[in-house]
Image (cartoon, rainbow, N blue to C red; front, side):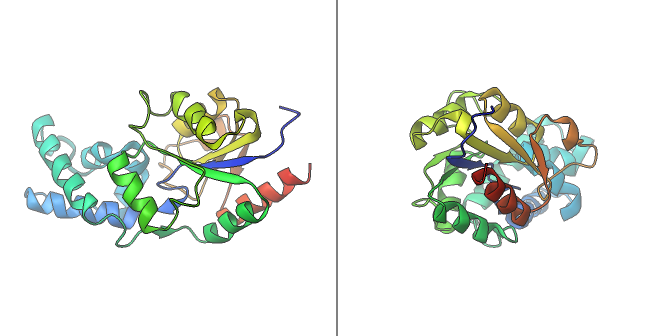
Length: 225
């Protein structure tokens, strides 16, 4: 990718662009309480957020609940979350400035997430991002979610950019796989919801990025090539 010319910055949503953990964990704990289970600790659940609500529930109740009971908890979590989509969620420190930098340089940006549309779109609206993003791809926007390449290529089609001139930032291995399979540059967001046993250095990303401020530095460097 020696002819890389940055045109578009694509983000994973939860744990990369926005810190949604406070709302997700709050809704999880309300659901656990409603079903007679003890609350889960925020730090225990946060590393599982990138893998969806079902993974959060599994990490909370383990073998205490069978599959059917976990499915009931899941529906309760999703109902609570849909009605409390952005009570406490906020941008990671430095992300607002990074988005402003991207736009000031005439670059496009967008979101590719495995979050379902019913949650992605209200969250983007609440954060006043929907009109700013060149594309918003949810987990059910295409036939396959990440790590499949289809969401990445669909995002590029909507944003009208070539994948090889995009960079994708995510906090999970499946993010990096998806971006690499689309022939994008990829960055691992170390500020995100990284599991204790994760090894981001083995994911195959072009770089490991410590914070949104360092992401801005990476973008500036890419523009100076």
